[in-house]
Amino acid sequence: MAQDDDARAAGANFLRTIVAEDNALRTYGGRVVTRFPPEPNGYLHFGHAKSIVLNFGLAAENAGTCHLRFDDTNPLKEDVEYEDSIAESVRWLGYDWGAHRYHASDYYDALYAFAEWFIEQGLAYVDSQSPDELRRTRGTLTEPGIAGPWRDRSVAENLDLLRRMRAGEFADGTHVLRLRIDLASPNINMRDPVIYRIRHARHHRTGDKWCIYPLYDYTHCISDALERVTHSICTLEFQDHRPLYDWIIERLAEGGKLARPLPHQYEFARLNLTYAVLSKRKLLRLVDEGHVDGWDDPRMPTLVGARRRGYTASGFRAFNERIGVSKSDSWIDMSVLEDAMRDDLNASAARRLAVLDPVRLVVDNYPDGQSEDMSVPNHPQKPELGRRMLPFTRELWIERDDFSETPPKGYFRLSPGAEVRLRYAYIVRCTGVEKDAEGRVAVVHCSYDAATRSGTAGADARKVKGNIHWLSTAHAVPAEVRLYDRLFRVPFPGARDGGMPEGETTGAADPLPAHAANAAVDDEAADERDFLDDLNPDSKRIIRAYVEPSLALATSEEHIQFERHGYFVADSGDHAPEHPVFNRTVTLRDSWAKPSR
Image (cartoon, rainbow, N blue to C red; front, top):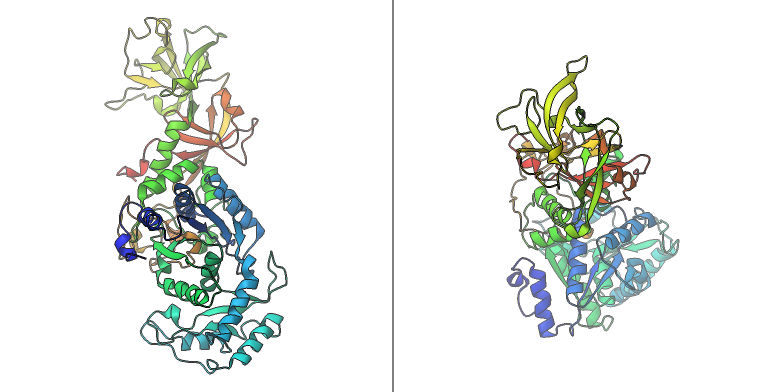
């Protein structure tokens, strides 16, 4: 590269700058090929969304292609179910790989042939040390590795052993194949890394053909080169693996096994999001121990959970554009993601009325048995979306907190003797209340002014400060409403005293989640205590509410704003006309910014 990568890592998305420079220099002949290579061993989370948006987005911006490649090198943990879920999540985010869907297992024959070639060149050997001996002789961060007793085996012996490993003659852990690089290297990844292991396990695509499987560091760089990838993007923790990435493909290119120009690896900071955990291990624990209702629980930071909660693909794309791409670690506050969803839904979600904590309002001077339709806009800022009719009757549902017998100063809703406008309808005056046996208000009585109907001449002659919503008791539809909130009550779950892990900074537009598909390394340093201690006990609350009649016919995953309450979505699993179910996606404003929280 013409410039040092760090010198080019500037701007909101430094990778755009790098790609633009490579195109200008014709480094790859004007081609731009990226890839998203998840391991099919689980469900994608918010960090993966960044990688998807980044890789597919960079390719699309440059008339290039992005490959979907499953890193299926560990048959013990992988499954077709996960592949299908991953592919569906990529499509949901708005991207398509076309004909470029690949698997690491597509290259098993080539990877094995290259392994034999490395042996023939004196660049690889079969090591028969035990796993404990391998760890001990590899050295530490401060001490170099030392040669094991098998490092100087002959080419013929190494080839014979590798072929017998492939034939299934040896048990798991008996032998491994290692590259011969530099045991004294200060970079521990270059100390004769293992590239093949014995694993007698059936693979979901290749069946029982193989009982030795390549490791990721060996597989992904060769896969990139075979697919003619130009820009290989991964998370910052793989920066120290880049010398190995380059060493492997450079040796193969020098030997005429791979075509130039070779791909180049770039690293950027993975997503660190407050009030969430993005570790596969921790997410699995949440599911297995029953702290959530599965991988698609709307509180989970998985893409299947986000979709069920009502988060939008365009909201994720906007979020990732806002926070940019960085090479330095920092934390993104959950409110940035929520604001992106709020802004996206504000423009697209139709408005509807819902009463979540109902109390009965009786308009005593309105004719009993009469009903009239009130014209209501589907979106106040978008008249092109039209209007709908909402039935108005003598008895209505209103929100319980829209009435107060002893209103505090500045309270402009309904109270004894006070007037409010029933939104899209009439001005009413409170005339009295009825209470139940426990002394709780059960019914509010009022009278209406027939000359104040919204939309008619003279309706605005009298002004009132209060404006509340309502539903006709005769027409409102009972619904189950699930009020979801953040899964954790503190910004840094599991960290000491709920504070920020040491050495970290916060920022709303600095870091970027990374190629989380590669992020197999969990940060245990922050685990001063069990992260489950920080679960939010109020993260899910189910209530019985009333919604306007049209919502019984809402389609699965339809986004709606309940006026004054927030954005909701018709649940993709449980919603039905006979049993409407709505999940709260996000409130109208950031309630977590209040000092009381």
